[in-house]
Picture (tube, helix red, strand yellow):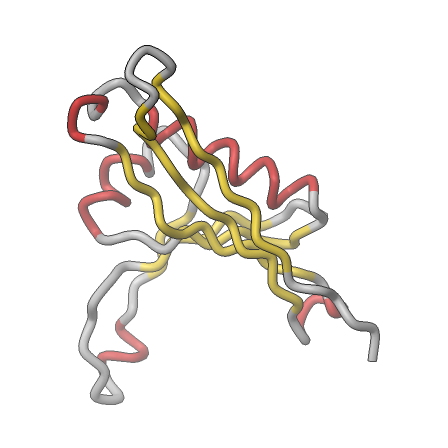
Length: 121
């Protein structure tokens, strides 16, 4: 089997005036068995300092991480986020929402809505 190494890419935004970190995010590139042994990017750990919220730093971090995922050859990118974040960013970013009814019917508790961006390859 062809091996696809996992990789972590992090973005850190520094406010140079205060020398303080004001935004962070990570994309984890993971090998898959599906889609011809391609890779998938998982966007995680998006955080923006309260003093900078509303300035679209979170959106810029997500877009940059999605670009990293695409340029790394990922067949899809999955942001790990809660429902409120999806509603905020979904109109701006081309991610498709997926309901979790399949899992709810089998006794799982819905914690998050899943959204995915397909078709980089």
